[in-house]
Length: 301
Image (cartoon, rainbow, N blue to C red):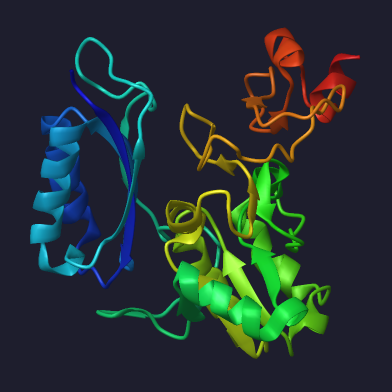
């Protein structure tokens, strides 16, 4: 029986010709019947792909043969399944693009990258080192969510600060607003899904005067692989594919609540308006009813 797997990976490294790398990556992924999204820029590679286990392994092996990509940060997870052609059910198609940024903060001029990765980012912490920091510094440690606010509705670190942003490009203005200046003398741990957003976010914070900034290496995914739901993480993890969320154990806490009735839920669903990208936490009953977000409900009413 074919096994479905999903690969989440990135590397910050200078690329002299991202367009040429795009063509190679597209051809490689297509030849292996993989689906997902691969983003490239002059600063590196960011991807999430799904497919049959052997095909995903071959893709990873071939990609790491390229010298610039030998240090890819990689996380694995279970896919939902494969269709009749052997393609992943978790992604509708394969998309391979070159952009100004491989994670879109809208601040490409602030990012400096060399062959060792991001220059001037936060101190990386492995999951066990994070626990050591919390044990040593206690309540002084501030968890700072580096994701979109809606992602935190179904899962987050305990007592984390969740900035009111609907997309990554809003973080720069959020940091510049001054509302987090009181954290500049505290140990701040940034975290995100797989680690890539915090590579950039931690650097943006340091350049704005935050004195002690850390980043959870490998993100929540690696933390969940290490501690499951028996550590500091609470709830489910939002993911950007057809699965919508994943749990790290059979006893994950349910921290979300239905946007319509308030029933505890970890299920997320798109607003029923086809033009809307808003994500809603919904219970089973209201998920079946396909409700609109507040904005489109008001327009419809």
